[in-house]
Image 1 (cartoon, rainbow, N blue to C red):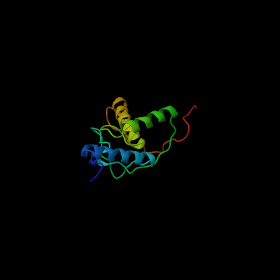
Image 2 (image 1 turned 120 degrees about the vertical axis):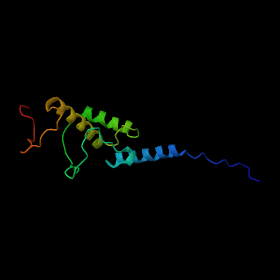
Image 3 (image 1 turned 90 degrees about the horizontal axis):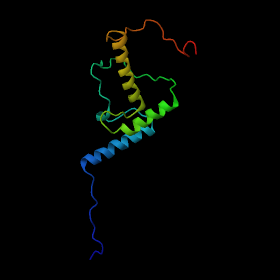
Image 4 (image 1 turned 90 degrees about the vertical axis):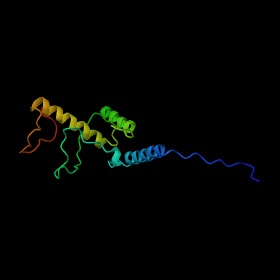
Length: 130
């Protein structure tokens, strides 16, 4: 006779299991500074945004931003990564924000049309007068 009756431990629902799996993926991506995410967490193209072309390969860029802005962005990624409409990486957040701002600039300064390609080089370094 068994002294203690074994009760099966409750297994998580499939939705809860999926959430746990997504959270583990997000935490892994954050700790490994990865920008790869499950398909359902990939940011969806904004309406009116052109699909990436062969010329749209990913390129690593480096620039400085205020520390407080960086901290706020990191917290937003950490707190929204598991939700629809959230971002699972800094790269995804910055790309989405840049897309929206470029669209706004095109509307405000170029009659809503994308700016024409730059035929020359892009000035690098500190802004003039700084």
